[in-house]
Every structure is written in structure tokens, then in C-alpha cells.
Length: 478
Ligand code: XUL
Image 1 (cartoon, rainbow, N blue to C red):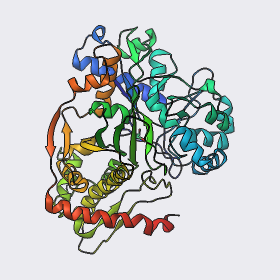
Image 2: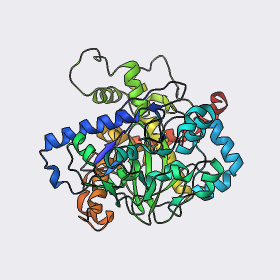
Image 3: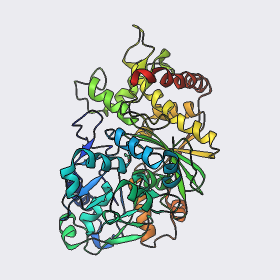
Image 4: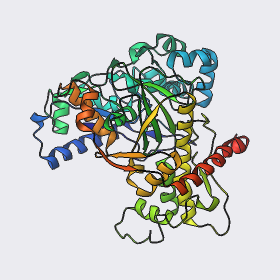
């Protein structure tokens, strides 16, 4: 499996307010290093690798010229610059019609928005574009020479007819995007090509090793956590935070607050709600204010563990301090790129422990907003599994169980997206007949965490107050 360009661990350039860019060449260099290191450390014989799976951050726009050279840095998933362009497109296309065709509304995050922005603001770059792709598919191009993608990742472009699992000629023609710019579409476990001699030289993989379509980080992560059947839900806190539910059919939110995408299994879809700055809220705190009193002394401990220790000094509810995590605008439920982060309720008696705990609670409140929409749309929630960096913190796990008011589960393998990509590659290599069968065999629950009644009751109360914060602040953000 190759897990590519996940912005969770890499920084991005922000050359303007709310902008986010990375250079695809950096991903390819990192990928070569990572694959070489993996082969070296694991001592796996490349000849024994049956298939390579791919996953990576979603929604980015990688734009290439006729020679398949990168035209400009990729504008990535959390970039917010294209609000005017996507609003204009939605009005012209018809906002309701867009939800009917693409199953999703026009949002700044989606790939189409970034393409519209490039055309409007960088006509000289637009003229050079001959193909467009998603981040992990740029790595596929470097590995195999093929321009291909999977329906799950393609769902996040706003160029797909999600219900039919095919590119939308209607959207493409309304947006003025030539269909020949797009990669070929596959189901996630299909084989799209094979490792080229040149890529083999650079990575240490064996030439001719098949490469499966794979999926974006969320759908692959869900497979890695066994979220393949309706009723199973995951909450993943990486840079962003995602509440993800598998569905039998495309479940449409007429308000467009949830994303409705193809899942990485044939004939299956999923919905997901996204908090833009989940893990990012805590990383921001660490980067700006340090990781604990001893942050100047490198005591070798994980800075996030030190932050959690500090947070644990505050009681549940952070003695009235609230954090709203809108550091990169917000998707679910507000769909508002102008939303901003805020602390509320501070008194002179509060200190870092309250502020850090309020971040952990505020992110969990924001994720609970997705569960509230699931309830409205009657999307079943039978089991909840936690993943991503956020699931490594015992305190954040407990806060989540308390805020959701439900038992939560952990799975043995933490690297959800990478593990999911490997599972999908295993299906592609006919090791299993289906991703469902593979998940039965390869995903195990390691722990169950029940809500603590007293703190759960308090946090449910606080969630009601949290819900009132955005409407109260909205006009100030504008
Ligand atoms: C999902 C999303 C994130 C990114 C970054 O919609 O934006 O999962 O893929 O990891």
C-alpha cells in the first residue's frame, strides 16, 4: 500500500488567507523514500508484493501540462479561496440541480472549485492544462504512467454523478472542462496498471507489480476500520475530523450539509460530515503555544500526550470554556468558509488546562453535529469506531464516548487509510473475493469505551449550548 500526500503529517504552504497548497513533486519524492524504507525495514521481497494499493488526501487539484509536468502547486482539500467562483457556478447551474446530479452542493473544498479559481485568476496556467488529477492519482501516474482514479475519490471532485458512478457530462460542459482532461474511472479494487521500469528503479518495487485503483483517505480509512455495512459508523480525527457511515444507496441530504459519495465497494455509498480543523485545532495550539509547561525541555515525550495530561487537570466541561474549531472555515453543518475559530466563556481563573480540554470537547461537539444530521435523515448508527491520531489519546476517546453518549470501539490496526488501501489491493489481487470478506478476516476490535454517566450528562448539556454559538457569532464572522 502507498498512502500518499496525507496532509495530516505534512505542512502546507498558505500564500494567502485560507489558501492551502502543496507541491505534487514533494509527494512523489516522499513516496519513493517511504517505499524504499518500508522494503528495507520489513525485508519483504518485492517479488512477493501481489498488488500496490493507493490512498491519499482527497479533493486536491493537481494540474498537468501536455508533457504531464505540474503546471502549478496543487490546491489542496482545505483551501477556501474559491468561494466566489463556486457560488457563481452553483447559481448558474442551479443549486438544487447540482445536488441532484452530483449528490453534493458547490463547496470551496471540492476540486471543481479550485479549477474554476485557476481559470479565473491564472489564465496563463489554465491555458497550459491538459490533464487534472487527484493527489494519490498523481502518484499512480508516476508509478505506472496511467491516468486513472476510483469512484470514491472522484466523488469529491463535484464532477461525478455519484448515484451513477460516472463523470457528469452535464457538469463538465457547464463548467467548461474538457472531458479528456479527466482520468479513467474504476472501482476501488480494480487494477488500473502496473509499476513501470522507471518507477521500479526509483522505489525498489518490482516492475510489473499491479496497482489497484484505491480510494481517498476517508473511504479507504473506513475500509481499514471495517466500515462497510449500513449501521457501521467511524469517527476519524486527523487534521480534519470525519464522521462516516456506509449506506446501501446514495443518501441525500437536501441541505447538502453531509457529503454523499461512492464508497470503495461496488454498489455501496457513504455519507460523511467533515470538521475542517479537528486535529488541526490541537496542532495549532501546540505550534502556537507549546506543548506543556516543560515544552522548552525536550523530555522525549509525545507533545500530544503532554497536552492531554494538561487537559486532564481541568474537569469535564472545562469549567464553562467552549472552543469552536472553525480555524479553516467549516463544512458540516454550516458550509461556511467565513466561519472562524473562537474561545468563549473565559474567566481570569481559567488557564491552559481549560483551554486544551475545551479544544478536545469542542472538536467532539462539532463531530456530534454530524450525528445529529444522521438522526434527522434516519441514517442508522449501530456501532461507532474511532480512528486517526485523535483515537490514540485515551482522554479524547473518553470525551468522544461522553459527547456522543454511546459506546465507541477501537480497532487493532490504527493506520486506517493505509490499511484500507492494502485491503483493497488484496481484493484486487484476488486474495479475498470482496472488501466485506476482507474486513471480516482482517479487522479486529481491540477495545470498547463506554460513556461515564456523570460527565456524559454534563457534556450533552454543554452540546446544547455549543449549538447556539455559531448562530450567535455568524454575523460577526461575515
Ligand atoms: C474529506 C477531507 C479530508 C482530506 C484530508 O472530505 O477533506 O479527509 O482528504 O485528509
